[in-house]
Length: 243
Image (cartoon, rainbow, N blue to C red):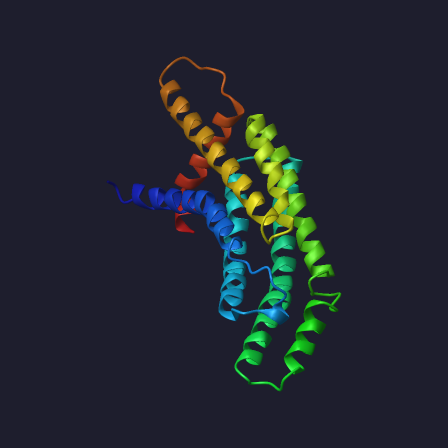
């Protein structure tokens, strides 16, 4: 195995791990999301674990969609890519306040760090009455809408790149993650997982068919084959390896 091939293979392995592993991992995490109001939590550790995990997995989720659209050009793909930072910023702000801040206060209340009733009032203010970053708030709403735009735009982009209707439907259904607790968040992430798996298989078939056509007479390539060739070229370029 050459020295040039190892980085390329490692990059491809990392991309596939993020692409195929993030959605089901995030879906599993949503199943642990407590249904209780943060002011009535029995297990603050579980609440905090879920919301810390969401901060990490939301970044990987953005990478997942970015890798999914790699090699795809056009307005829809551009809209999806451009909206990903909006989703990350607003979802993270929402999770930090409505999730982490309220969970920390609930834990302080359980351990007697604050006076009785003080933490409950603070949690109610942050979670129920906070129009900026609470449960029903601007940051939560913008983050959810941004994800819906990402999901629908990515579905349109995949359709233009040659994805079948089932793959496109799964991608569009992932907009359900705009409401991240179960069952909607879980279903949306499982739909995204199905879309990424089907598109990855399509690209791998496209690479295989392109390899078979090399050395033979020119043949008309499908959109998926063009995308697969573009992604392969990017991963194997010296510039990408240096990065």
